[in-house]
Length: 442
Ligand SMILES: *[C@@H]1O[C@H](CO)[C@@H](O)[C@H](O)[C@H]1NC(C)=O
Ligand SMILES: *[C@@H]1O[C@H](CO)[C@@H](O)[C@H](O)[C@H]1NC(C)=O
Ligand SMILES: *[C@@H]1O[C@H](CO)[C@@H](O)[C@H](O)[C@H]1NC(C)=O
Ligand SMILES: *[C@@H]1O[C@H](CO)[C@@H](O)[C@H](O)[C@H]1NC(C)=O
Ligand SMILES: *[C@@H]1O[C@H](CO)[C@@H](O)[C@H](O)[C@H]1NC(C)=O
Image (cartoon, rainbow, N blue to C red; front, side, top):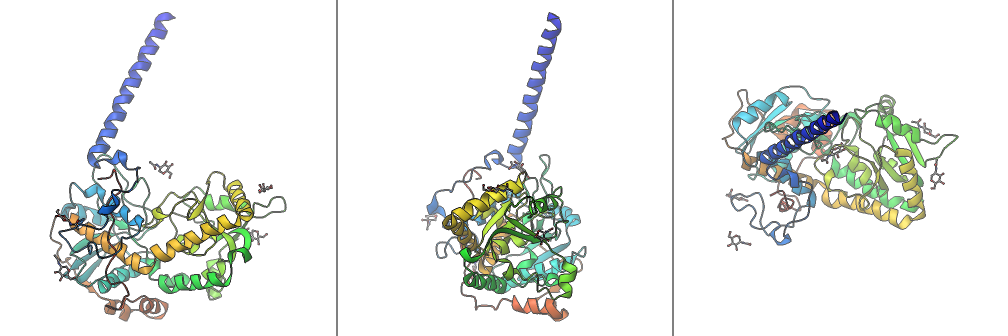
């Protein structure tokens, strides 16, 4: 007996030692590939005086000192590009990344060329390319030569690996296991298939609507409307439906199914976003991945209830729990919603402030000028990492605002015209200045 337990305890000791070295090895690998990756979670600002000064002396990407600092969430640009900070981005990496892309976009001397590899869903690619063309109109001569790959799908595509550097790929969202570079999604320029207007007029409409119905006059429930069956997340939306009002239980949630087919027949009257802001609380829950609805929900002046999120788009890392929204526990949705709504209704001042802070974030930090500034800095920082001279694609298709809009009719064309940037007329034609990386990620 004694010798057996001695053997097992030695075995246990051996297992512990092996595990220790394995873990240490993995930590070191990570450390080497991503610099100080293990300090990544620490996000305290660097010395504030540094912001926007002297940070990019060699390029024009920021008008050092003269323009106000960009919102805090711009700092994620540094993090998102960090995998390539030491190695740079080589031509080989970009070539290798092509197979993940729906299209390739090359900017050469301010001209834009597109190579399409796959048709993307609906008009996502068209409005994304349109958006980049508008950026070039807004800041003419200030977008450097570029060669990039873009993916228009819902899910991140570049799984993070500790064994190799990722290929650079722009897409709409990422998560903490992926190295996709988040870029503003198509809906900022319009989503004609479901009649969602370009962001500037839509945001103005929502903000106007907010003035007409004060928070206290809104229905004292949490509202959600959408398609429960898009759900890569193990049925989280279907699960949410259990929190709806029944004869037995009232969790203070009012949940509705969106039927796009009949909505389309009815000219989308039911899905008018402005009409949704009639409840004091608005629930956001991810579908396949992130959802473009987050900005509409936050803009409402109602308190946003965000069910634990697993994906992030370019701006959503900038909103703070209890300041801009109330977090809802994904594993305990009904109780969590009920608790938050009951709390808010009995502390209306606090809930109203959360609602206001959320829409103020949208108005101030996510208006179209800031969206363009984000693109501006992201593309400029990306181009600084490029270690080759971008050149014409083999079959260059040059695109311009005119060539794109001439091809379209109907709502697509209308949304293009409504979101077209008028050169030199913008109130702020100088981009905000890019704040430095988060401390600890240097
Ligand atoms: C910028 O950096 C240089 C040296 O690197 C320094 O001499 C100069 O004073 C700095 N300018 C500002 C505005 O901080
Ligand atoms: C910086 O931008 C200005 C126009 O805003 C341009 O005239 C100048 O050549 C640019 N400088 C560099 C180094 O790119
Ligand atoms: C919701 O919360 C209130 C207040 O805490 C509680 O009285 C009520 O029973 C809760 N509803 C359900 C369905 O548990
Ligand atoms: C939730 O309950 C409301 C009111 O009873 C009902 O109108 C609605 O259809 C329900 N939603 C779902 C998704 O079943
Ligand atoms: C990554 O996200 C998952 C949920 O999606 C979460 O459980 C986990 O804690 C996150 N990891 C880090 C390091 O943030």
